[in-house]
Image (cartoon, rainbow over all chains, first blue to last red; front, side, top):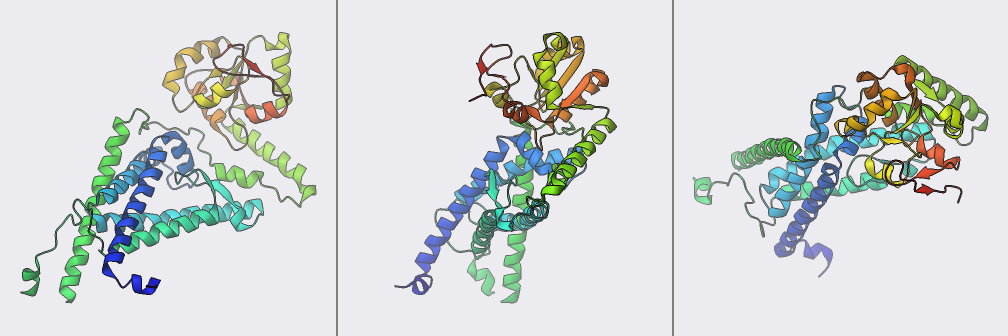
Length: 173
Length: 214
């Protein structure tokens, strides 16, 4: 059985989807807790992006975001509100990736080094990383989130739908 | 089929909103409960500066050797001007070493280490007081009497892009330490160790000196 045939087999797709959910959940739980356990460090790194001039707003972002990510990670690991959580993560990944890219471009211009040699702590929870690797990681996380939106792989889920779909009889009416 | 799909999309969007709202509430509550949580009302950065501006200002093209000195000097001037604007003074590594070594000059000089506790424990300027500006309430009882009695206060952090020394100096200024006494050593511990000056490990005045000559 080649890869194309495997992905036509629903059981394999479901298994892949459950693994993707666990992987995404574990990644966000790890990254979120890493930041939540060092809030001052995360606050300093958040400040780099100039996203908030107001101290209260900056504090709110730095205080809430890590726990928010850890919370989403837990939901995915437990299989609760999977599609809603996946869409939430995909939505936050896009602006964050652009912010990281923007900062990397500024550093690239300032340091006169090849783009992929730009390395800094983006405040993503994994310490200092090379930008190309970081962008690749974010792309993989985004792709996994989008994959989960397809709604496959309900196995090992506590409550896959927070708002259950109507029964098939109701739909056929 | 279209209305069914629309309803399914609606359910996902509603679920997303519920997850986001619950997540924000959870994040807020967790920060309040966590012993390491941030104090939301505190301004952690009285300096209001952005590291990136400095990184860009300090950046020098490796091949452009002729501009190195002028860029470094203009960056130092910018820094001094900014400190002056904030009511602080900058002190260079040469002067700091002189103050440290000369027993006559050393009288009345206090060093303030504005780094986090693990960094301080790992090695600080001998006799320096620990003062993490992000947890000032923890250190004020020890640091303030020492600062009030001092004639000159040298505040430092890691050096480089680190601006915690400025933050610490401004906090001290805010609680009534005269700004004429406050000096920011921008080279920080990185320059200190590069200059092979002694470093004390553990608590203040522990006497455990680490030789940085090796």
